[in-house]
Length: 354
Image (cartoon, rainbow, N blue to C red):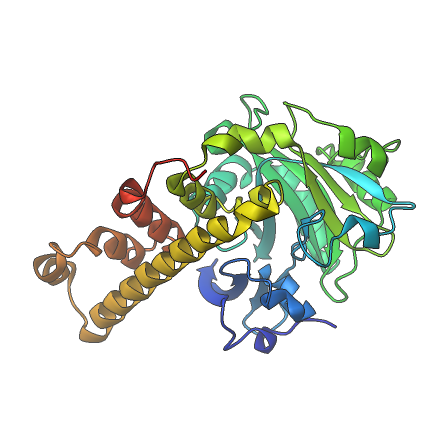
């Protein structure tokens, strides 16, 4: 089933954001937080940054949402067939997909063309003619190239060196959602001399389940059925936070960093209710901040307030700095997280959970 923008409208926990890029509107669809109920409808798996143009056509189509091995009912080891599976390196960066407007390439993250990461990627690669030529060719064929962006300015855990890199992960057809075969992707990468994600030809599920590596994040496994699952190394996850010293503040930080799902896949099941209760609390607080900021900005626009009047009336409001940055064009999700980090995070309990 090919997704349409209308498939995602008026759904709880799914956001549709309009952004103007190169003078043209685009609509970015993304889920707000990982809710098991959301994934019962398979179309919602595509709410991971799929982007539509003003005519409702798919303009950029990243990977569907996929999960850690044993994370949920869809990824239980005993139920999956690993015969003939492909084992790719899981890179520790940010997923990037582009659009082309009047010949110019614009990069976006899952939620925005204007997040700090997207702007950093645009700065590093927006004028790179090799990438520009490659992306224009791929997108003229009605496909989306999917990249991982790693940079010392955007380092998560793994250190990839001092130079930013844009690594090709896959190419996806915009008209069918199917993926271009690996040998064709390899040919494109060779022709343009751009880095391609590593494929481990001799890997097996038995071997990687025993593996740990302090200098890598893990694997993405693509089964012959087309389903993808993630396996992350324990050492990678414990670099975020030690399992035996976890606090409420740590959980909130992982929610903000969008790595809480990976972490939950590692902990013992008896700890999950406490972790998920904190996760729910943080998500609700983030939603409240976002709603408040949106209401403030709507009033400013409706009343046609000048910046001077906004400052006079709202400068003492605790949400003012967040709202004014969004009003001036900053990404709302990014600003909400920064507001939470400044105003809410320091007040969370820093005592060990167990």
